[in-house]
Length: 191
Image 1 (cartoon, one colour):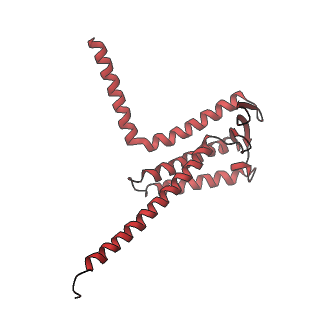
Image 2 (cartoon, rainbow, N blue to C red):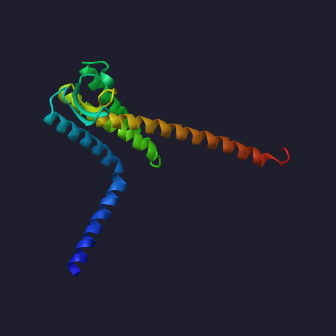
Image 3 (tube, rainbow, N blue to C red):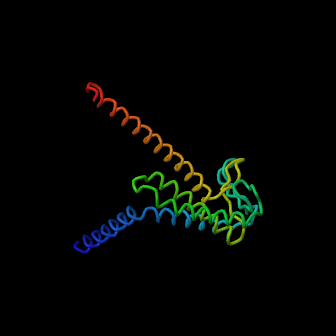
């Protein structure tokens, strides 16, 4: 019985350590996790399918379709490898520089930016390796995309939302502070 209790105490300690690491380093874990998940899924598709092959998952709705994309989202600007690699590296450098300026308390903005950066990094890895981005998620008539694209789009939505929310809070605070100034002057004699 003592061995079982000791065993569960060790498991609880490991779990607590994991939670502390997650809370302290969630940004790094999210960044690495998105890239790893994207790269593993791309490798899995590329190692088991041939380009152009499609496997129906939900009939007439969702397929795993292996596509090698030489362009950007939806295949725009095909065969511009150098442009996309340079643009991707510049985006990462700028984002890393500005990321440090985001307030610690602004978790939504950080979450959005990390998703955006991890998706861009994952697709940049493909572009540097082969000049082609592996896409495989195919819903109906929508263009084929990948996990990194999902992270980029989700990151953009969350980032825009966080920026708009911060802007509205700032406007509200400035407005309410202005009201406080006016309230404090009501009923006082002019100097």
